Image 1: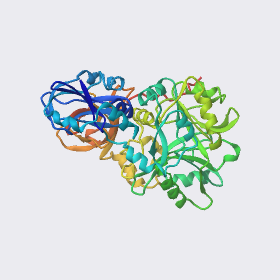
Image 2: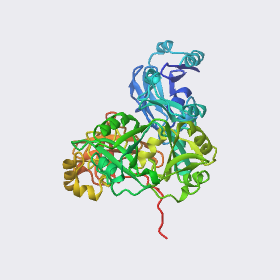
Image 3: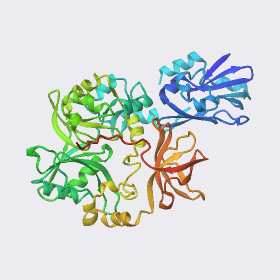
Image 4: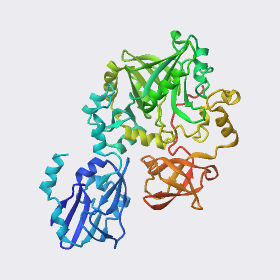
Length: 123
Length: 391
């Protein structure tokens, strides 16, 4: 399974035709305590760059953008009651949604893990 | 993912010109995340995070740096002269303010709006007759000082203090902790002040604050501020708390934040600040905007600041539109977010008077979706100010 990253600090893990999407550990550390998550409806079609979800910390609301186009196939409904899971395991159990990938060609515009970690050093 | 409000670009753009408080070095040593606030680089949070800091303050004692706020002395030949000079600018009763006591008051415009909210102390010292001590909001101090100075009678002057820090120690264990350094602090009444010493360092302390908890504010010379802060942080009950938790604490306590819940377009009656306009001033008037303000207290204002409890868990932020049961726009959220102690979203905002009764159903427009909410009594978390029991 390959994992890709956006400069907006989303990650997307590809398993066959399914893409799992979340925010990076860096993103959760910048947000601080997450208190609310709004997830998309299953079946929603997202274009790359569309607002896929909303994550709210104590202080502010932030959008999570779709890193790749696709149809929402699943959501991590447990986050609604346990939004702190995003702070505890942003790149694991704190995933947001799963997409059926529309076009794997879009992945070529994303960063691999080492490129993303290097990118963080520049911020 | 995009942060909606505190963009790094905005932070760095303003960083060059930011002022620092005497505790800036300490904040950075403690790992604070510094953000621009009212022209100052201020700690928004420390590594523990806003939720932990909020909860710590409610359960133990939190130390806040509020040195960005303005401290100033209003000085005249005798108490009556100085008190009357301030009464010409505010609806407070300062003639009857006893030595060592503090009042919350408002600078009002001729139209009945609010220039700022502030704390006024009458120092108790024998040589302090004719002096009042003011603490004003950081973002308003230049405006306040110019307004006050331009409207003083001969013989009364405003003397801003630039070489002092201001700390706030807030929480249920604040009194026990402070008493180790300031013997007798634990017996001070709510909204009283004393010039005293903290481990030998001269300080002015007041039993007040803006979190809804018991606590103190400590005014100290800038050069001694870090020593006082470190001595308090060495106490196991005390942790440093940033502006993030200060905001969630005061919101749960139902306290107004200037520039958000009150401003020059809101009147004291609309803001539900009737306690800041005591009986004598209501009878006599004679303060800026008295005509409108007293009429609104008598007849009820057209709109009113209320507590708003959204159903569900989505926070309603400042600027959220508020509609009544028939879909009519009745106001805007002025402060809103997640209340850690309340355990869910909390907000304050203005609604039409006929939608202001507790229990009134409202609809909030959050990111294009309608969320159900209702008017609730303030505060969201009961105040725990220190009250002396008569004995």
